[in-house]
Length: 101
Image (cartoon, rainbow, N blue to C red):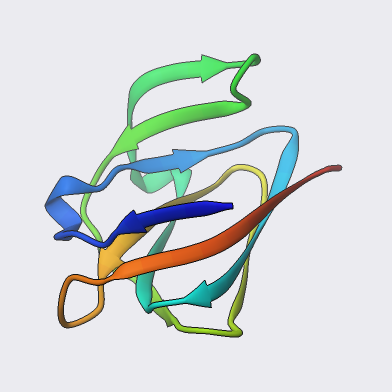
């Protein structure tokens, strides 16, 4: 279970995975989730096999808004940025399942 307060996109970060697909299921609150091809982003922190994550910097150009009941799929090697406020700061509670492909 993840719970956090949404924030401005400038305070969020990009990440991608190589092994696992992420399923984000929103229980409470609303957030925007940014997405981008990793080729459009700059590596900030190299891939960690332990975390199955690589972290990036880059502009937010595309995002979806996800509220209660929404399911967002983040495929391996697709950049995603979570926790972006959707109009105002609010608490989001969600389940993130990691599925090994």
